[in-house]
Length: 412
Image 1 (cartoon, rainbow, N blue to C red):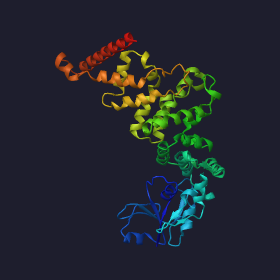
Image 2: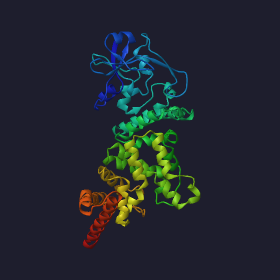
Image 3: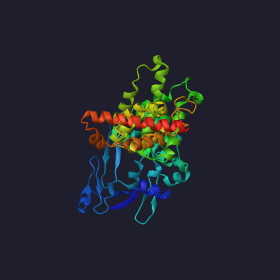
Image 4: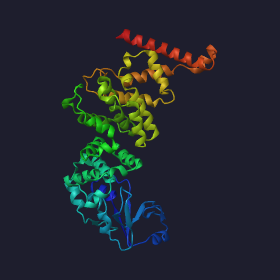
């Protein structure tokens, strides 16, 4: 029995990047032998074992044969006779097909080290196109490594297009899609993920909402070459540089989809069948986005124009919005809305932009101001009960905000 370190740990070591997880492949063994040594089996489709002390994953060397559709349509063989090279050739990219033995020697039958030096993401074999998940993985890897100068081989891009052409994408589950998308969103250059999905024609399957916008020529908006794709990639790249949180990055994407609503307002005949609110909700459900991200995404999408025109809104409308999104029990949401509102998705000449004002600071100040009114003081002083307490609380908050805004106006 021989054990080798494989995959991402070896790749990241050669790239001098932090190693997050270590995976191992076991050659010349069987499930019984590993279990006898104290390993715990966790794999269903093929045996994967957890080390009794380190809890790292150890997988038996295996081969795979395509017998069906999708990423599950494989027949797996993990007999003792499977060699290390046979195991490595089934992997997606050459840079992930490097192994290291216990002495520190590298086993690199498919020139992964060379591709690391050349900064190329290249498929190992034509079997690459048998698994649709690899489209998302390659796009995600490039979003993680593009800042180091990596690019995708033209032949690999061609195979990715073939996967889409063969309609394999429809067999991906929402959990698999979200898992890869989440990793890409948290990468150094998340906008690259969407660029590659579009380039290989997979965006229409994963994010049809974005794909539809990309294909529009919007003559009404002040966009260079009427190109929404370039505008999205540029603005998302800028936003991501200063905001690392997953919920903020994904909510920015949903915020960008406000273009559907804007187009609808301008040209009823063109877009009269698109329900913008349901468009966002359906996308969140389809991708199985976590609840905490869904809530923020829906709030920012539904209130985008309100927030960018907040200085023109009445104090009562602002207080009602704060109540509606329950800002009092979720004060961090003020910071989130401020960050997202700082980035106008339209160009600076757009009439909806309030870039001359600091929305973020305004939201923080008025929250502190309005939250200073004590409910217990209202109850003890006014003797109110039930709904009348809330009614009086809203009245006082509106009054206080009116006074504050009048004071600021007079000072200016």
